[in-house]
Length: 313
Image 1 (tube, rainbow, N blue to C red):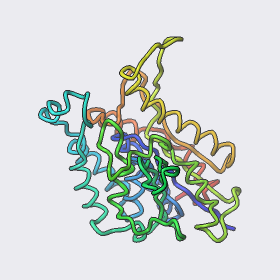
Image 2: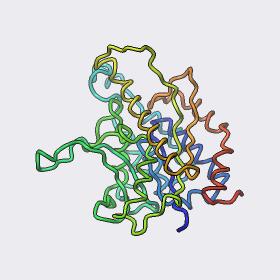
Image 3: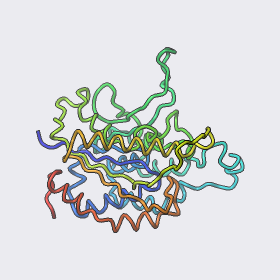
Image 4: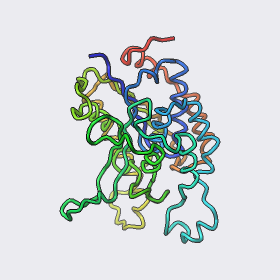
């Protein structure tokens, strides 16, 4: 069987601009890259990128959305802070601007089945609504447009984009879903598992035939000093979210490296250690852009040439 090619895009809020620019540079060097992709997996901001690419938007167009509309999405009014008692009650931002943007770029009636590429978009379902009390629970959800009984092809693309990016404390939940980053901020391993699902692929590719490129939104050099931390809810609330998201990314990276070896490549450059790059760090946009346009991507281009199967232009 010929290669089955997967592109995986991490979550990371406004840091998605870094991913968009890296994709822009890869496509410039390898014009046939996106056309060759069989499956695009994306979580949160990576999910929005994945949906946009599958809907036919170019990396350059997606980059522009971050640069031109990012401020609208992360717009926290003074009145909202008063209503939310600062940041103690209620999400920091509404999804009004993001909802409007996703409808514009993806289309109000575009379903996952309408997209030109297969996609896998994680979100977390807070209540599966099971009638039996023994089965009612919260659970991870992978929205996809593969054929089969569990296909989500009828789901509206813009709604899936809102669900995967509903980061706790940043945005309200969306129709009972929160950000897929709480369990799969790096969706690489989930994407790899999807390629092996006999329910959706009559002849799943052998692992040796899978090629997987994973793009992160930059690796934050976080740490918590101290050997014994006697913390409670208040102290752990915000760092715990970052800890879970960063931890899940590392696990997926390890698993994919072990299973795919040289047929897997991950690019997620370390962010400056002396700066904070939160999901809503709109004021760090300039630093993110500068890093993305100057980063040495020779290794990923070499990997694409020798492993992905595209010739150098």
